Image 1 (spheres, rainbow, N blue to C red):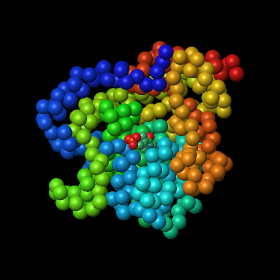
Image 2 (cartoon, helix red, strand yellow):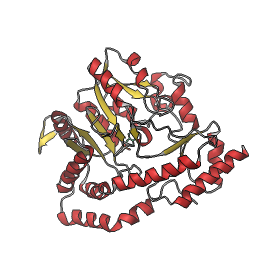
Image 3 (spheres, rainbow, N blue to C red):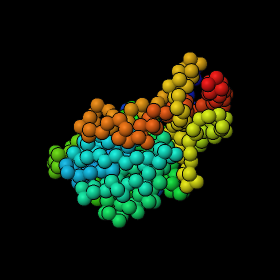
Image 4 (cartoon, rainbow, N blue to C red):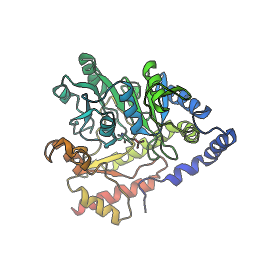
Length: 367
Ligand SMILES: *Cc1c(COP(=O)(O)O)cnc(C)c1O
């Protein structure tokens, strides 16, 4: 049996350090907005090469509060990819603004910069590219367009901690970036967590107020804020996880290289990596017209796979209000119909990767 990812293997490698992190927190008698969070915020900002990091409750809140802090709300439009996890769209909706979907480049699965300009209207305030599956979107033309039209750029970096675009780390490629520390992400907590990273000091200050009931000074509430803070325990765990992030991303790269070599020319669409991208392989996603059959065969062989994602946001019940029928966003729909994520985690052994490869090849040969 090969799991989709193995938390046991990940945690056992770090167990003494995670235990020590827990002990630091319980011994400190300080559980919310304390020293662990402050230290993690400094460390993660430095990791991204940015001036500010603000820890929040989850990735969705990171994106949503960034929009709020930018003053984006009702009547405004935000350009988002048509193929993404629904959280990207929900962040826009929670702010009271309207997500405007733009189709991806079918080879990279990231928003196609060439399709953005026609989607810009007088109501557009921001572009929110997603670095899907751990690979950076093509940011230069996006930032150039945003400058030309006076728009903000917010990176949804929830799947791409440490990924690089033209040598530069994601998180400081636009005006701000939202990260998720959901357990399965490359930098995952032992529970929910998220952060905003930005070089904009005023924006950072605004998000700090928003995450803590709209208050700078306890019991003085300047604005209607939220309760969305990264707690001390998660921050302490994340500091330990951050110290191995690059090493673990490197091991994901080794797994991906083995997959790409072993699955070459077997009838699958493999991930395309443009020469300017250094992906961190949050997911290893292949495409096949008979995806469901391939997945069923792998399941029968004891190999767990997942689909990211089976239904695009515009076809979800949550977005019936947009009135976009099947066929409205054909590239996103084709991707969602054909993608399959193979097992991937940093500690995955070569023999397990080879077993996944052998089973894929055997299934495809059978037709
Ligand atoms: C995980 C994820 C989010 C949301 O993160 P949470 O911490 O689960 O709220 C947002 N966008 C993308 C692309 C994600 O994968």
